[in-house]
Length: 228
Image (cartoon, rainbow, N blue to C red):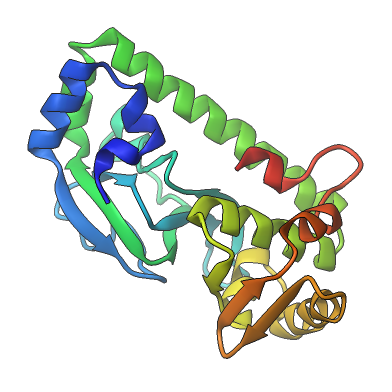
């Protein structure tokens, strides 16, 4: 898939798009991959098929997803605006949820480009603000929804970010994303299946009724699906 289909890329000025097309490296991101771990230098990934979860991971604690990025987003934008050598280890990780293509560029190359094109900087800044709002809404849902509703909301968000209702998500992975025990996911998924909202078998999950699942995943204020 071409980078021209990425939502953030489409917001950039034509001259910036031309430069990026010459500098991009096509990559295939794999489910479970931790972005940045093997990079010789920090990189930004313009997503065009893969989805990437923003996950809080601390030694000795359960992991917890606080956001999800898809084809409208770029993963790793924090490297463009923050100290390239932070003094404290970051607990917020970028972990690939859905395998797929992306377009990578060194963060320092993108940083230098933004100093020459203020309109591009505005687009990047807008994306970061949207990400903060997204994370805040996910955090609010974690506090206000029960496990069944949180699972429904995450599945709707995953489907919308991936652009498909056919998802490869194991119960173990979903437990890590929601920060709960695997048995809790099994019970919640069973309830949603019994309601005719989804079907799953050996890590393959098919959403049968996306609007119905979205209704389950909504709180009185908002649902994760509104941020997709």
